[in-house]
Image (cartoon, one colour):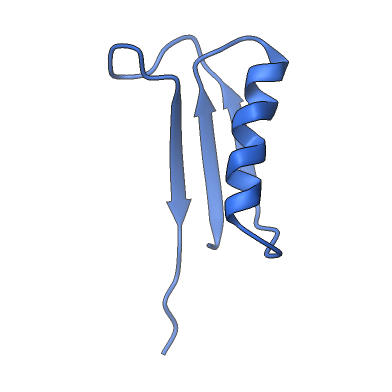
Length: 59
């Protein structure tokens, strides 16, 4: 992973932290530049989290 952007449909900090911990754990030991953003709503009914991952393949 090169970067991540995590959108969480919540205004509660605990919800943002819970979503962030899942993404952080998935990146393993590789700490990547990331954005964690609380939003009022996402595009689908009952959608709570959206994760955008940018990756690069070299070679």
